[in-house]
Image: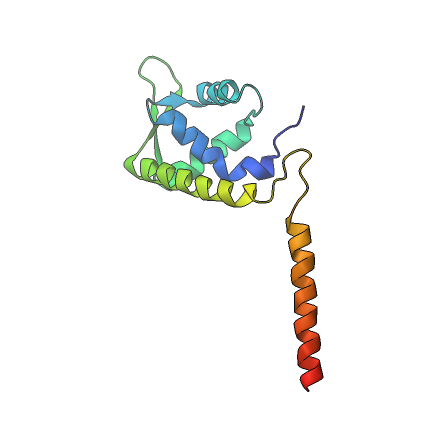
Length: 135
């Protein structure tokens, strides 16, 4: 099975966490389980990554931490700034997907861009030769 590179997903850990917190406060282990479940086990967030994200997002004002009333867990809730940041990251993702998909070949597909680039290179060379002849 192919695994998702942590480099690829790193910029979207906050988005996944904020998505979960949009509807209700939660705590670290539960958020981790939700991410694993929602991705059908294709992505398992490391504990250090999760708590680093909590620290960063709390510092940026995107989430607030509070103690549970019936247990000793630390819970997190999204703030208005966090909701705004989440919406911005979703817009960014749509643009990112649009750009990256232009470079993802479907299985068995031959890229037309190579032929186009070869043609453009030939045209550029011809233009360069024409200019050299004029000099």
